[in-house]
Length: 343
Image: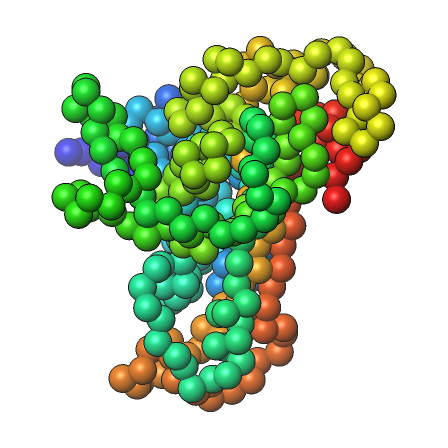
């Protein structure tokens, strides 16, 4: 090499903050371009020293696999580091087709703690009552539009899940376990509540997962309740084939008289709503309540055999954080069409 020679390296090997090279990232690489970075930052609902909360849009994958370059983990690592040396990390799953609240950890300590919170291992009690109470109060709530209506208006689904391979030897499918003892299965529980009466073959329900399994809500709706989620062609394909799209005139469930749907003007009604020929998945993580990780994070730095010893200090701030995310456009349209009788 001689003085003045220029060396060209792949973007992934270039050191320094990504903010210094926004406009030089080609869209064909696995790194986000400037427009993607700006878009992702608009999705952030909350940020503190420990966590980030985003409202994930549908059809955006969480984990990037070649040749996917616009996954949430790749985008977040580049765009949402802010003052940290590293970008935030995913701590729980959200299907590519679904939408809603997505939680990420900003530090190694918060990622470890959040991963533990979202796991299904038996959690040992801490000596801190405030921390124990906050962990017990943690929950997620989803809203979904399903085809049909569950027989019971509310209840808890206790149906273990198993993973099988289809005939092609590559595609995985989650099914209800047969309890034969010959297959591996995982315990799965979901609390549900019907939000209103069935209108034209569909009803809105609220889902609260009590365990964290892959495709748990979709399989429980389709196979345990017999009411697949609108737009879920993987687990409700046969029901979708028989399902008749909404007619022009609806019947009020109370009086039996014709009822006019609240139809929005324009072509937006076709963008994935129930009026579309091919609706998008109607599954949205609407609400999330979790412990204030930034407040409790100091317990990880204490030397103890117990993972969560007594807090040595009492930082300011609430013990719990609560977030609510607005629905994506296709679900808003469906909601406006069918929300007259919701409770």
